[in-house]
Amino acid sequence: MEDRKEKRNNNIKFTRRIRAGRRTYYLDVKVNSKGENYLVISENRKTEEGVKRQLIMIFPEDIDKFYDALQEVREYL
Image: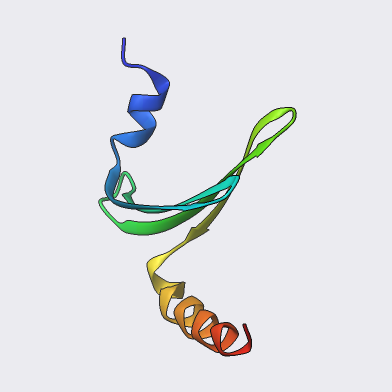
């Protein structure tokens, strides 16, 4: 029987890890059951209780809007 973690990672086509102190961010391009790509941005954060994980999924039809908004936000940081 396949491990759940392995099963979850089988649909990853590309990944980029960003370490930032107690946080680690992952940008994963995954493929769904229909063969369509989508982006998952996840944050793993170490806390006293353990590791907390948060996910954001961005679908192809929204990626341009998301990218444009990120560029705009970057100007203010």
